[in-house]
Amino acid sequence: MSTKALNASTHWIGGEAVAGTTDLIDVVNPATGEVVSQVPSGTAADVDRAVAAATAAFPAWAATDPAERAAVVGRIAEGLERRAEEIAATITREMGAPITLSRFAQAVFPVKVAASFAALAADFAWTEQIGNSLVVREPIGVVGAITPWNFPLQQVVSKVAPALVAGDTVVLKPSEMAPLTAGILAEVAAEAGVPAGVFNVVHGTGPVVGEAIAAHRGVDMVSFTGSTRAGRRVAAVAADTVKRVALELGGKSANVILDDADLAHAVRHGLSIAFANGGQVCGAWPRMLVPASLQDEVVELAVAEAAEYTVGDPADEATRIGPMASEAQRDRVDGYIERGVADGARLVFGGPGRPDGLPRGAYVRPTIFADVAPDSVIAQEEIFGPVLTIIPYVDDDHAVEIANGTMYGLTGGVFGSEDRALAIARRLRTGQVDVNGGQWNPLAPFGGYKQSGNGREFGRSGLEEFLETKSIQR
Image (cartoon, rainbow, N blue to C red; front, side):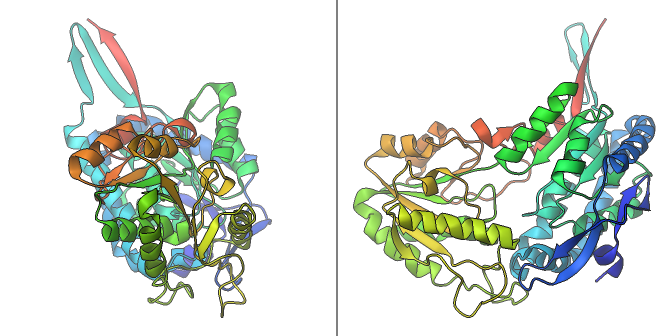
């Protein structure tokens, strides 16, 4: 493993490592409480330097042929793939994802995303003739990217790759809780031929560095992924400069199981999405909606399946659920479990408190509630942990009403006969719906309705987010 990436307490500005202030932020392994690295606690002045570097680099990068920009991003994908094991181990250490998940998803998804954007450039309509108008799609400018800790590299690449293909320059603030792979990406990007100043990294906290990026007059767009609460703040701070703001925020997605579904498959797959990454996924399915007459059977299947989710050391290949990403997150999730019990939901698996045999580390007990009221706190608020709420419904209309009955609308699932499930999927007010376990597609647009955000990531829509459109009449 590269000690440079794990231990470098520097920003990356103008194509080189830049020392920050003497104030450092500890990066803590949530499984042990051990400090594994430190990064600088950046300042508004650091953001100014990074924006200046990005601004200076923009004209030449924007003028670079899109095919060459795409080739650079393709080389980034190759570089990340070569360092996949290092990336997986780093993410497991800094935020507690089980190593098998880190290898399968945390390290692999960024490669697929970068490669998909590199491939898009060749067929993209950079110019288009509409009547007497030449419609030109141009880089938007300097992009500020602010990313979360749950998928620390994927969320970065999902912004940086399309921005670079579009011809933008980037100032990134990775999460201070899981910042280490941003250093790896900076190294890979430089090796891939990204010119100095095109990609910059400023470490620090959201209230300082994040707000400085969002407010900066030299930043033309902010792309943010995180909680809905934080997204509201980013939008408010950015509003003074009327810059474009793309938000990918929270979720409380529903998995609708119809009465003609393959119950075993629907429950097994639904639980895997609900518990993936310890439930710390904005697109998780924490609400399982089931016909009231089938709830007991679904509960039995879900409890049996949940018993197979080994909780423990994330570096152990047998572990399926590691710690929460921090002690604060552990306390938050455990508090919601206690709230579910207090509000009268039927606890059928897990419960509050630490798992047996794990007295230290940010661990919670994977938990399942049944007979959950659709308007209860645990059915409405984003818990962001391995907590499944089983909610009974009367008929299809009732299921759709419950599924659409939160302030969120990010993802969802429907299981049942193909035509009927597709009809239900069309009625859900959410940005992405999987029917009978449809596979993830990096070319399909991803993003939310309602307070799950605005804008789209991935595919052609994800590239268009980072472009301006100009009409030239002739």
